[in-house]
Length: 86
Image 1 (cartoon, rainbow, N blue to C red):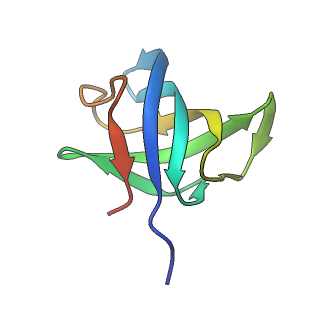
Image 2 (cartoon, rainbow, N blue to C red):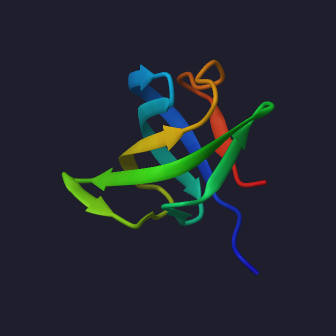
């Protein structure tokens, strides 16, 4: 059984038609690369995690990192949004 993960969006760095790069804080987890997160009715896949300038496979609770989220829309990604695993 896997732990539920939660990410809080602090800042949107950039967006494109396939997703966004955001600065997030891990509220619960760990948040792992490849995990699908949900906010409102949108789903996003966590594709990349940068922590202190290095690419890592997971982000532990209470830590901030820059992540690449891919999904069909970025409308629900805004500062304060909380993404959770389904």
